[in-house]
Amino acid sequence: MLHRMALRVLPSLSLAVTEEAVRKKKRIVMFVPGLIAFGIYRLAKHLVPIAEPLVLLAVSALVAMVTAVLAYRVGRTATWSEIMRDDGVRLLSWLVGWIGAVYGIQLSLLVLTLLWIMSYSYLQHPDGPAMMAIIISSTSVARDAFEIGHVRRLAEMGRPFLTFPDGTSLRMLLQHKTRQLGLWVLAGLGLGMLAAFPGTLIADVQGAALAQLLAVTVLGGGLALCAYFGGLYPSTPWVETLRRTAPGELVKYWWWPGMAFAATYYLVAMGVLLFVLRQSTITTDSALAMGAIVTAIMSLYGFYLGDRRHVEDEQAPQLSSGMLRCPFVMGILGKTVGSTDTPGELTLGKTGMKG
Image: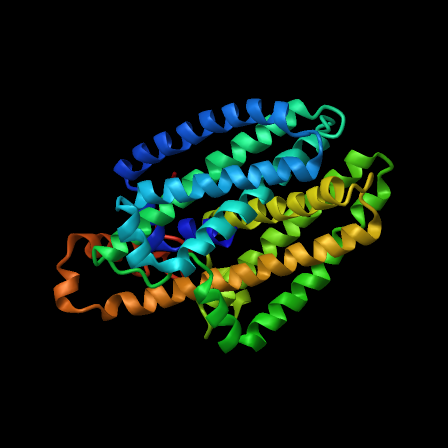
């Protein structure tokens, strides 16, 4: 789900996909696949054993793959021949495989686990959760694929983007800043294990899982915030940056994407145990492993987002004078060039997180 965070945290991407005209079109793009997914669910329940978790996830993945391609084309506003020629097989394969299949499965597991925590288990009452899993995953995939297509369209038109949300920049970061990332990931592994212990104090299965979820959410979100500072201001200790940042900005980023995605990843991991591996409970060992993995991922992603934001802030002033006369670029720079609220007080983001 790193692409989702990048589309909202990085100013150039966020501004591109939250323009009012884009948001209006996106609502339609999300609504239509939802209706189609409902019809597919009604048909699939008569053709395949939808009460089997692996079958449900396979159906959800297939629907999401088709949705991703079609929504991307709407955002791209180009013919199939142009898309194949300009975007290439690698990008389209990533779109179908990652934004479609993998992301669709993750979202389905997220829905099933949330319902399980609320004592509405898919394994006991398959129809309702299965329907919601397919519909919600397809609409979310449609939204993100459309936004990615729109970003790709603007890039083809000449609008500068220093980061494309396909993971290429993350792979480059892993190669060039291994030591810094390693320290943050180790911190995530250690803190994440602590999230297992609140659940050991509660006998109820759902209650224990909820306690572990809350612990991972708080720890993972906080660590992502600190790692973000580490990437955003590499020459300044993150503790110092934390102290100087406006409290409102801290809470905003701690909540989203920090806590929001820490909770999301943990719910997906729980879904794998409950519905793929068919474990009846979340054991302490499982909670230890899940907490460690999720907080490590959040620290990695937090540092990455901070590093890419740092790159944008460094590179934006170096654009040519001709490019600076472009209204699009001036709009971006007006939002991204660093500013302070009060002397000695920093702000994290200069863009609204809409859409």
